[in-house]
Length: 141
Image (cartoon, rainbow, N blue to C red; front, side, top):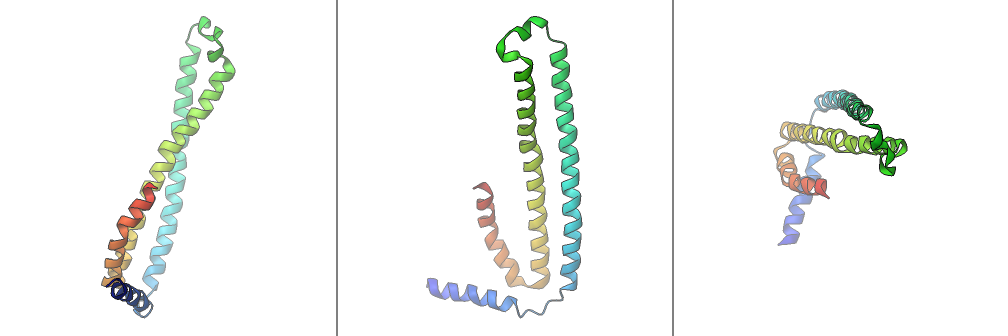
């Protein structure tokens, strides 16, 4: 039973090469995807820079207006505060910037894969729809 299903699956994969699809549409989609990926990365870096600058300026303003006696403790020394600002900024970047960019990128990939699959072959579209849960599980790992 499993061998029969595997043979069907392999037959679908073998037939994908002989579909006879015009790849000029796909090259246009590939170029469009490359442009939007570059735009996405640039915009995410700009958002992260604004967020990091805003966070650092808010923390600096808070430190400037604190009482002098607060700095007498070892955990509130200038070195500890500077190190905390740096590590917190990197943590915020990894939480906001990288995760959000990855989410937008994956959604765009899913939409593009479905468009290409439905345009070229219905069997390919069904194959991609079957593999989506596996891609989702691999995203959580």
